[in-house]
Amino acid sequence: MDKNLTSAEELKTIRKIMEESSRFLSLSGLSGIFAGTFAIAGALIAYFLILDNGNIQYNEYLKDLSGKEILILRWHLITDALSVLVLSVLLSFYFSIRKAKRTGRRVWTPVSKRLLINLFIPLVTGGLFVIVLLIRNHDLLVIPCLLLFYGLSLVNAGKFTYGEVFYLGILEIMTGLISAFFPGQVIFFWIFGFGILHIVYGLFMYRKYEA
Amino acid sequence: MKDLISSLNKVFESRVRLGIMSVLMANDSYDFNSLKETLNVTDGNLASHLKALEERNLIKVNKKFIGRKPNTSYSATENGIQLFQQHLKALEDLIKLQ
Image (cartoon, rainbow over all chains, first blue to last red):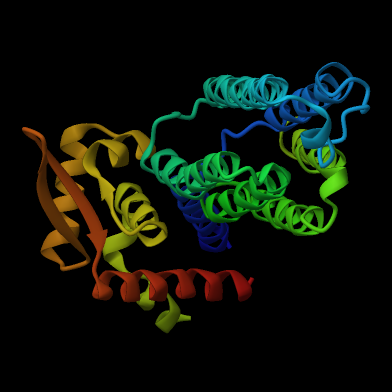
């Protein structure tokens, strides 16, 4: 009887060590909630301020605006998107470090290094490809590409953290593929993919693992 | 019952050795310092258990240099993986008997 109890405990410990040593468990759901909020804020800024309440249609503006205006418009949109990215990444680092400290885990481990490498290879590839799209004036494919490559990054990184990240990645990929068929509505796919999906994922993860 | 107990490998009786094998089952390789921090043990303690596992051909050692700093990492051998799986199986069977 006593032996059985220790066997169960031993197995439990083994499983825990295997999981803790091979998955980065300090990702916080709060990162998702904030990233989603920033993405929606960024989209609203783009729609109401930069694109003049939606009066500037992305597929038509090329005819109506002068070359200089187009250039300014593009830079505003790029700055807007990059601000969302930088803020989201910084906050996710902050929340991960905070969660690691609270749970007594370390942040810099062989697993977190593997997680970052696997996340950033598709992500940086996507970023570079988007720069090519911008240079070649395929602006309407930028948001579908961002969603697609971000989704692929998450699928790739999902092996080294919570399994839910993998499924978030699949949803981002699907959103990206569908958005490519609707060039006029990419901003709404941005709001759905980077905003709503992140917030739903974040709330789910926070309630499941942290609350 | 006697058979079951005998298939519980004596090598894995130590908690540290069990911990080392668990980490190396879940990862292709792991370096000394990360093992130390993951298992929360002292240098000397970890080194002696690693030595014991290496001598029994359960793990293998890969020494390399990162810049000028030596970096030692460990991985489980085929034999080690097999024996550890047997050990896990024996534990599970014991629980089922309850």
